[in-house]
Length: 207
Ligand code: PRP
Ligand code: URA
Image (tube, rainbow, N blue to C red; front, side, top):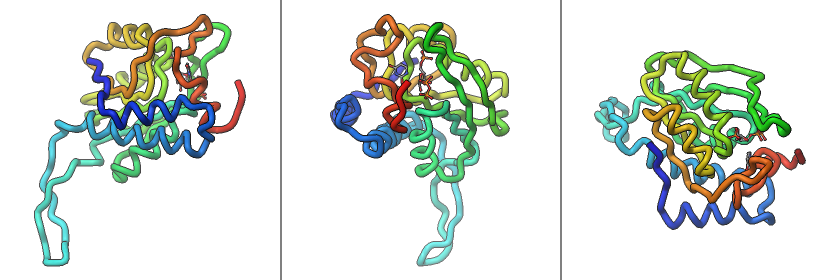
């Protein structure tokens, strides 16, 4: 199921991202802030455990997410600020890395690095800012599913209706939390209006 965030603060931050004047530091920072909003929405029904901690008045049983049951998987490069943001919120979660590059001629994603921790029976938060054709996220989901997690949730910033339809058809059981669904893809498979190339904008590169 696709969950598009409706909060006005979310929409304002998406507008900041689209603004070409936003430099790489502020671009990554805004991606990170949006990621935190996505995490709050995505985990709103996550089960809480009791945990005994030592407070200023002594031992106290408190509620907490079992952070170790969560694996945050990023798709390099543009997903890196999202991974850092989730790991700030949930510091005991595990991190996994996939490196993919869209071939700009065929527009297909190519996996060239896989460093996933044990995913069996874990909740996976797959983070990638852009869902354009949906090719990268589908390849990532196929690989992750083969590692037998209990649940997969994707966190994305901007998606095209076409790409999201492809992902939803291939994996209807997966929850997709996204800040903004845009209008369409252009002939080069970039999202319109989108924000350009998220990896390039994050790290001051071109192409
Ligand atoms: C971007 C983005 C997604 C992919 C989306 O990565 O981060 O992974 O494109 O496109 P798709 O839905 O058509 O597969 P890119 O390949 O540009 O790599 P980068 O993060 O290194 O810039
Ligand atoms: N990757 C991006 O970073 N942006 C797009 O619009 C499409 C793919």
